[in-house]
Image (cartoon, rainbow, N blue to C red; front, side):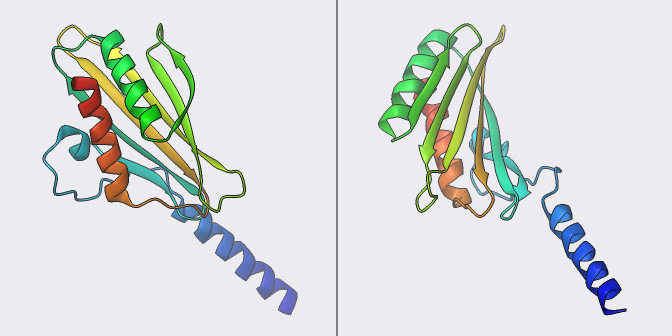
Length: 150
């Protein structure tokens, strides 16, 4: 009987851990009127890892100029630029995680030129056991949008 209750407890705990890493986006209540902050969300959990996302629309900016400014801003902010695909409008970057035993956190930035504006989307992921302060992520995302705009 002990073996059965141990197995049941183990399965219950495993189910709870899997359930905590849900895929439904969480939209935290952020007191910041910028579009990039209002569109911010994340999925996952501390144990499973998280993916943080946002997007913003920028008027009067061409993709080529925005990509150049964002690549420069991202590199100057301490990220390693892994690749830039001008045709697809994607910048992939990463940053080494402090105390992460060689782990990196990827940052992907995509640009979609629409008729009326440029849509800039950002996605940043952390692996299980790694955390970043939400306000710092939102601030970096919005500064990236501002870099594209200027």
